[in-house]
Length: 326
Image (tube, rainbow, N blue to C red; front, side, top):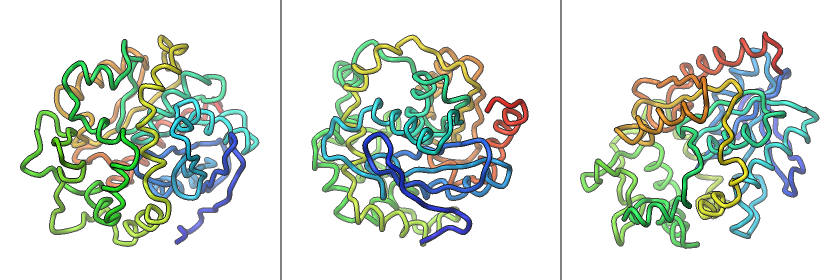
């Protein structure tokens, strides 16, 4: 399936073959999707930004869609993911870019901004605030806090989560995109997985598909994951502690570039006391960050409220363009 005006090609990037969708010309803006997504999650942003004078590129990230998915688990560290994006900018013949990342794509762009401030002139994170490097590896910290039901642990054993999600790809994606927490969900810890249960067991489907999601959108995404499986995306989670080890050199580096954070007000990642604390802490590691919460939207904010997100992005990007930061 194609989206009008969007072009597709493949590039050799950082030792892998990367598929990209692109539109427009001008200063480069790279859109980094999260889990479990593909370039298509940015279908509303590509034309909106291109029409206002930007060269917008949305890759299938490592392990997703038509981009290569290396077999080794340790081929999915943050250093690989940041390396992919820096390599993509170079492969496109550019020296600078603005980065926008959603979900897992947000940690990629936050870290890219700290590692390569010479290349990345501005950064937008969606859904996942930037955080300082923790004092201990994240899984160890959760384990010592007795939080072994947190979903990160469910994703660690190779093959377990894959089997759960690949059993019925269509239903799995529907639950992720618009399922609601069931009555058994711990409201204080909504991302915990019950012992002996699965991640998807927490979610139930409402009777109707939401207005922002069309059946052909679900089929576009489901068709890709039926073809590729989910292993590549889960491998990102299997490097959480390894990422902690590898990023020690940037432990105290702040994001000094112009920065914007966007999230839906109903996103479970930023809801409640824990979310409020994360947003407050982000101000320490991203001085001057602007935060915009999209009222009523959930985690898939750029798909749920594309016009409001696009306007927020343009309000951020256009002054940078005019000031010739690129």
